[in-house]
Image 1: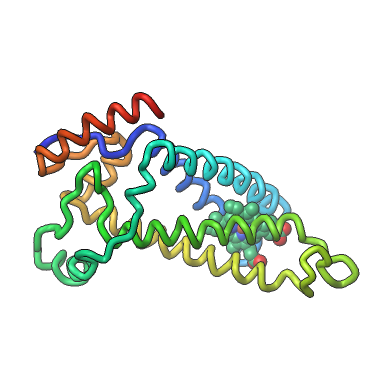
Image 2: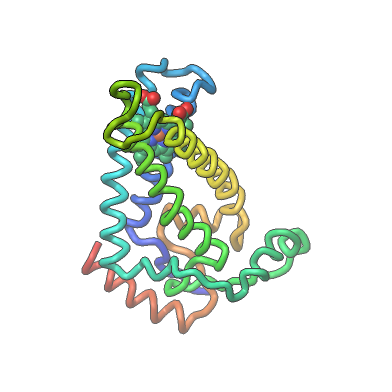
Length: 220
Ligand code: HEM
């Protein structure tokens, strides 16, 4: 076992800031939706818009970081051992089977994580940002139509935005459970707080830890 830097400084900042913002957007968003009352509708709209702008700025920085560090490669999908990973979560985990995926700094996401995170990055988040911005800037119909978009109502935009919100809430619930299924209950959580995790494959991780530390020093 070797202690290896898995999550770099910006990555952890981005992860936790994004989590807080998305949870806050879900709370204010579902208040706007009418699910409950806490801040009051007017305030919920105001806070939702502010958090949305901060999230969009964060996303722009995160895109830049992923491409300049080459970390975007972590999300390239693979179907290799996908079934093994699913079987582990459905059955193996309850029988004490070993983890089918061995994490390295070069490849830190299992096949299921790769697919899920890629789906979030390429589909759910872009849909939320696009529908959110349309919602924001085309809110007031002109002459009973939203002329700039040539559509009769905001309903399709609101429905897509709400479906995306449900998907994100479902993701957060599944994510909270899955982070407890690492080598120990808290190992994944600790790694995202401290950046470091104890990994098995010494040669692979040692080599990469030197590489990625160099990358992070020069680029983060
Ligand atoms: C990232 C960019 C986002 C932008 C620009 C944005 C913008 C907006 C706007 C302008 C509204 C309508 C407010 C009004 O009626 O005055 C809205 C509603 C809503 N937002 Fe967002 N939002 C974003 C992200 C999110 C996220 C991440 C979530 C949830 C996780 C979310 C959940 C909701 C919900 C549930 C509603 C109510 C939808 C309805 O009932 O029609 N939003 N959003």
